[in-house]
Amino acid sequence: MKISIVIPVYGRHLIDFKKCWESILKYTDTSNIEIIIIANGCYDSMKDYLDSIIKNPNHKYFWFEQALGATLAINKGIEKTTGDIIIVLNQDVEILGDEWLNYLIKPFEDSKVGITGPKKGAVEILNKDDGKYLNNKEFIVFFCVAIRREVINSIGLLDLSFNPGSFEDIDYGIKAEDAGWKLVQVPNEGEYNNFPIFHVDSHNEWLSNAVYNRNMKIIFDRYNNRNLMEKK
Image (cartoon, rainbow, N blue to C red):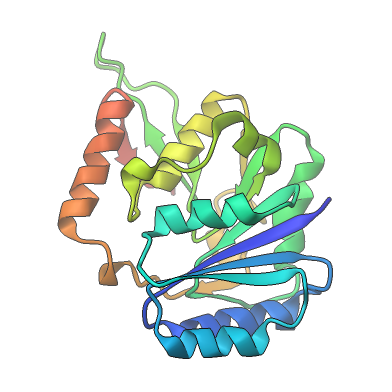
């Protein structure tokens, strides 16, 4: 099972990305793992750093002068991959233990599992006909997520309606589940803090209230005014 890792890198986050990169190398044998870095809207210091770290022919970066938006950057990264499992990591995550990759990959032994990740959320569906709530639809939060190639082949890439980002992971999870794929939180359901990762979460730098509200409306309108709810 070939593994690809996609890391979108944006803006002034060289220090965060260094921590991310060094933590991956510390806790992962990357010799046979494809790593695709999509650097967009970055300072030249990021390019200098990328030039210094890319030594393995399986590791590549692609440079875009202009900011692409998180959703488009992820899509461009996925398009460059050749793996059976594609892992997407935010530039501002730090891996904290060597079991992280096995946690993400092991559930794919079940051919029905399509997406895994350390944090799951859910949406409640409001039936407009009788006003009653139906079963939850689930999603994996995309700061760290693993996606089976067949899922991408069956439902496509992330919807660019959500670019520069926010709620695209919710949309993708709903589409995957509707297509019959299982979504698995690792290492255990409902235990996000047990996964060895730290996430800075720097969304406020690029996510305006206007974009957030627009994307929330897209979700509500698309899925019969489903009511967003974080799964505990």
